[in-house]
Length: 127
Image (cartoon, rainbow, N blue to C red; front, side, top):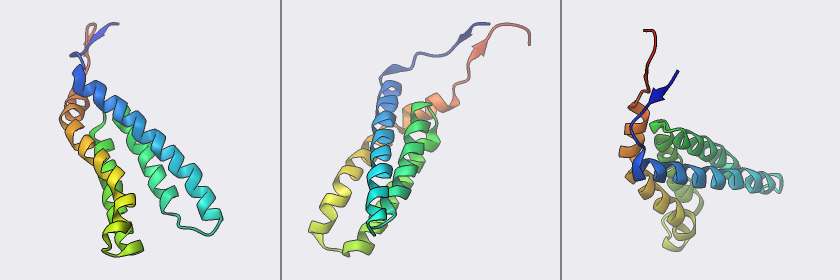
């Protein structure tokens, strides 16, 4: 049985690449965050890392839910930053600069993810 879909395009390829990057960051967060938690630190990195791994995997498979999960993790990071350092500029910069750049890229990939999430393969054969 053969199936056809529309070509993915650059947006689809970018969303896959970004999903891989997010999943890798998430894996690092889980591993290093577990180490920090064992030392008595915050469990934030473990929880956020699990969300990022899930988000990245969903984005790789073309699911829009992956983008929403990442944006939820980004919002959680902002809330965690306020809890940790208040509204001190220098405390925000190292905690939120990278996630904000990734959040912008995720938002830019939303149209491609929306297309990939709604395209169904066209199959030939018995109906």
